[in-house]
Image (cartoon, rainbow, N blue to C red; front, side, top):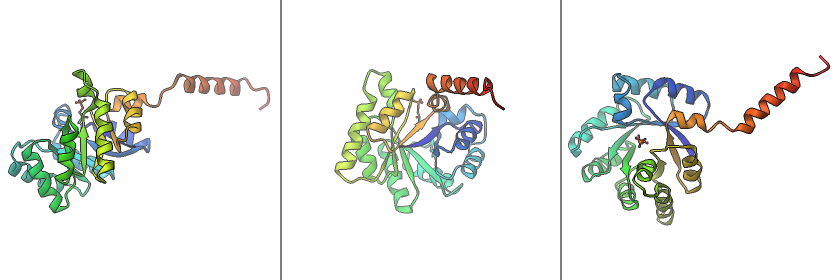
Length: 215
Ligand code: E4P
């Protein structure tokens, strides 16, 4: 499973990129709104740094508007992926982008049928939202497993992005259940490093080194 970061904050993206683990970035209108920046300028900065897919979401609700916005976004850099909502209009736009060779990420996926529809419309990626399903008492991970099974049975090459990640266990379980990618907030990515035995081990090695008898 590959790592994308779910943020529009450039400092967070730079830090995660420096760790050597980053295969892409996802943004959404809420994340961009927090940053108080020009969306297109921020996309230029991100795509200049990160080689992999950078998802940029459209705001329009009609296919025509989404296609216009998506083409403008895609013109910013070759690694822009146009993020579209899981609606009939979103899928119309998805089909057009597929025919134009523009990559798409169909977002706000909450059922296996929605994922299958998006894949058949030519989506490069589908984004099932784990955390938001868990929040309402459903099992987000079960959805990842079902989508992965359906895509495997039918040889569908659309990639599954486990989204709306809330904690490290989501990452392990998404990887085990067949997600190709997880898109993760910076806070959770940092949590993945930590283990008390690692900290204790470093402390022990340093203490032994500092107490050594010979120079
Ligand atoms: C995915 O692409 C979305 O931006 C994101 O994962 C949504 O997460 P949230 O439920 O924490 O807002």
